[in-house]
Each structure stands twice: as structure tokens, then as C-alpha cells.
Image (cartoon, rainbow, N blue to C red; front, top):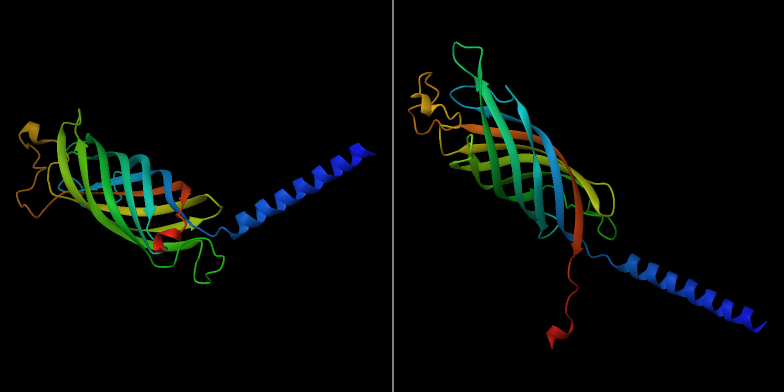
Length: 225
């Protein structure tokens, strides 16, 4: 009989602790401010050897880290491997260039993005735009360097507590005109233009999955005294 009372007390304590923990979690409305993600898709080159986007597309893939300042603004740092190619004039052959891109971009969400709890304006989805600065290492042994300006648009969807998806179209405007790496042939096929404003462009259309972590810090009440 005495043992049954002890078990009963333990059961009540466990139920109470579980209820209290669930209540604490339900009242903790702090958003996650950090996320890691992986993404992949297709990429293109546009320049002297290819005049139109989304022609001669090849694979691109990589990962990113994003820090969210608030429901509207975020900073994304991304690294991608990108293979570009294009046709040789008067030839059936195609040239190829391997690239590693690293960029940092500011993002603006058109809708207040996050989990909708007490804020009716918060949505688990939003279109967004971004712009920033980036650098590329490219060539057969990645011994060439270039700087570019990335701009683009995308769409975010948060489908679970920690998980979400992103789709984005990024357009990279370079400060060089030799991504084809054909200057070693003396520019025989005129792949490098003479106009310094006629710079090469690349781009990616990617789909990615993200994992959110790192809740916003609680306000320090004692710091106000």
C-alpha cells in the first residue's frame, strides 16, 4: 500500500513536470535567428561566347549560412561550385570553366517572415530580393580571381519548427571578361570583348533546404538597473 502511494506521487510529479515543460515551450516565442542550408540547381554563362541566359546550362551546388536580423532583413553568406560552358565559334566543341563562388548578400523579405503565433502579419512564406558582393576562383586549377555583384529574387517557405525551403534566381555581374579562359589561345575565336563595360555574367537557379537554430536571446532585465 505504501509503495502504491509512492508510485502515485511519482506519477503526479512526472505529469506536472511534463505539463510545465510543455507550457514553458509554448510560451517561448523567440524566433530562430540562424540557419544552415544546402542547395543545388542549374547555372548559366552569358558573354561573348553565349548571348542568352539559360543556354548551355550546367550543374551548380553548395551551401549557405543566414543570419536574420528581424522578420524583414537578413544576411546570407553562400559558397557554390559552378561549372559553366559555351560553344566554340565555327566548331562543335564546347569550352568549360570550373568556378568556386563565395558571396555575401543582404536580403529583404516582402512579407514579415516567421512562425505565425501572436503576430497576425507574420507568414511562413515570403518572396524576397537580395544583392551584395562576391568573389570567384576559376580555371583548370582555380588560379584565376574575379569579383562580381550578385543580385536576384527568391521565395522562402518555412514548413516546420526548424525546417524550410528556398528557391532563388541569382544573377552575377562580373568585373572581368575572360571567364571562358580562352585568352591562352591568343583569343583566336574572339571570345574576349574589347569593351570594358561588356563584362561576363553568370547565374544560378537553385532549390535548397534549410535548418534553423539559435533562438533570439532573452532581454536582460538586470541590465536596465
